[in-house]
Amino acid sequence: MAIMIPNIDPEGIDNCSERSFYRAAKQLPLGYTVLYSYKFKDKQRTEDFDVICEADFVIVHPAIGFIVVEVKSGEIDYRNGIWSEYKGGSYCELHRNPVEQARNAAFAILNAYTRKADEKFPLPFKYAIAFPECSRLQGDFPSDLNPNSVFLSSDMIELENKILDLFKIKEPTGQRDSRNTNAITILLDKVLAPSFKAFAHLDDQIEIFHKRSKRILNEEQQRILDETELNNKMIFLGAAGSGKTFVAMEKSKRLAQEGKRVLLTCYNRKLAEIEFVQLSEILTTSNFHNLLEYLLEEKGYVLDKSDQSKYFDETLAETGFDYFTNAPNDEKFDAIIVDEGQDFKSSWITCLESMLTPDGHFYIFADPNQNLFESDLDLLKLPVSKQKLTRNLRNTEHINDWINDLVPEARLTSIIKGGLPVRTFAWDTPEMEKKLIEDEAGRLVSQGISPKRIMILSPNRYENSSLCNTDKIKEWALAKPGEDKPNAIKFETIRSFKGLEADLVFLIGIKPNSRACTDADIYVGASRARFLLYIFHDRAWMFEH
Image 1 (cartoon, one colour):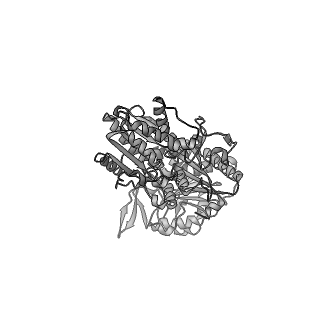
Image 2 (cartoon, helix red, strand yellow):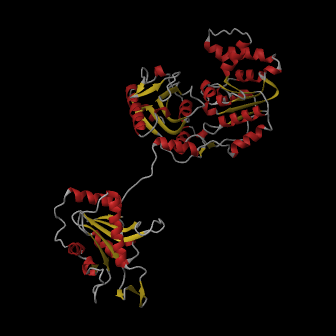
């Protein structure tokens, strides 16, 4: 059977004559390609792209050439240079001359071929008209119409014989040289049935994604900002990706623009260094411990750091509280805003309150589901806003759905539809995990992803991960914590990257029954991924989730 373009059920063709010809053309032997309703632009006649021409059928064979066939329904009459069709009991003039239609299409195809191939078409071509509902001819043909170029109902039964007669050959099996074969390939692939696709590399898709997810205040966030105008002290809750940090920064900026001395703080050093730093010219931005250490040492305190755990958990906050409780107001802040407040111990919050002027503004933004350090927000004794952030502004729909399944109580509705599905990779040994990471990183880079977009997050430190002693992922540099390698794939622990985000996240080292890899850790790590999330997990973890 012939190759039909498009390959459709002929019963769906409304015109009965075209339907009949389509059926007949489909029965042509292998080697024929038949195009139905071929649309083209006749550049010889107009440059207007709104004027599109159509050929009913174009039949192509590598040993013959091609033929354009114009199909007409019912009885046809040609008289005094006018073509008419019998319709409704009388003859009506056709809008267009069918011979001229077929001829124009044939030459338009030839011209298109010449432009594409930069040569003339080396095989014969013909044009014809078909009357599938007519069985007889009577009278004399117009001078521009070859009698062999008229197809009747009887020709629908043996269509190939009619085509061979028209080309004056017995069989379509003559000698084929490479030039003719190449010509037919160009004719089909470049002129009659070209193909194209609109696509974007993954890197391009990420850029499009960034534009779609541009951060602007939505009505939920605006309601929270409105509430801060009525209450000087409050806790605001929202799941990962709901825009808490954005609102915290926006409120900090507005207070600073009012002339207030503002502190925007958090527990995570990287969050302060990467996100908050953009506001550092108009307000104080720092993670809690670094700021407190700096302020106390500036006042001449010699701090005992021998017990690091006690120093960060207790000593700094207690010393800070002792100092600021009696400090003058000009050394205090008019507003303190805490992001990722679930990371704070109650004694740290008490210390921050001592650093606040009377009637100052004190706001905490938190997500109880990200409570990796087992802090208790109930101990903070601040009113909790009833305003809820319910929309995921960070993660694509697929990632958001995966997170919702993992932590139902953190459920958000994604406003960024689509994206790529979350992919999971099971491993049995650290060596197998490393190989999977290398393979997937290589595949992504081969698809146009810049290595610097890939963030590897692990519940374990680098030296305890499957990538220990690794400086490269295949040929791409791996930047370990503290290393400045701008175009490298980066490695961080989940907890050090808390509050931040990356375009592509490889969440590695996921194991069951691990204190370093709780569901809260997995939730935090997964919610960092904006566009693409890969989970590399111990095979046993799969059976628990």
